[in-house]
Length: 247
Image 1 (cartoon, rainbow, N blue to C red):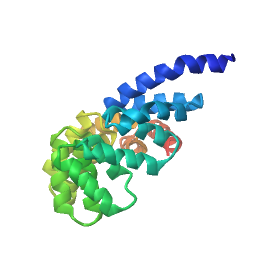
Image 2 (cartoon, one colour):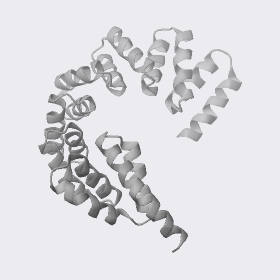
Image 3 (cartoon, rainbow, N blue to C red):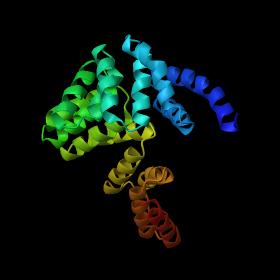
Image 4 (tube, one colour):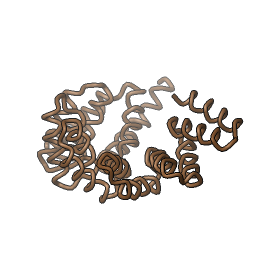
């Protein structure tokens, strides 16, 4: 028996157990990792054979394993078929993923809306984005607000942008601040920009530096401009150089 065969015999069962746990917990990073390990040993088909009977019998964790394994093999149609089974049980993760992988806008909206109305916070944000792209800005803002209130940092930033577009800079600053405090780099960069435009240079530098430290190229460019304006040309050149690398 080769080394790879010995490893496969040990890793295969362990990976299937770990994948089932990750899928049941909707842990995308772990599920993707274990699927990749199974694929690395050519064991995706074997894993599918293992999970299929339980999945066809309605075991939700097994159904989700089948979704992840199909994704690993780039079989989007199979993945969506299993997602639809999961969604029929009321599973919010499955509804959200059906929205994300929908081939058309109408179907995406239908699934995002179902997930959002059932309380899936990320779906609320994505529904807001979809509605905004189709000109339904008031409804988009409502869903951004719901997602932001549920703690989704990207929605906080998106809501703040809507407030900027409406000319409400006070509420925009509040939500950019919430996004920034949650660690969202776009929120930090946008708060820094707002502070710059308000003439609050010291606060602007703090937030632009924080965003730049997270690799945000736009923040690096603005920070470079700020450094030039405040007589720090060497620092400006350094940030421009970093921005060029990040882009």
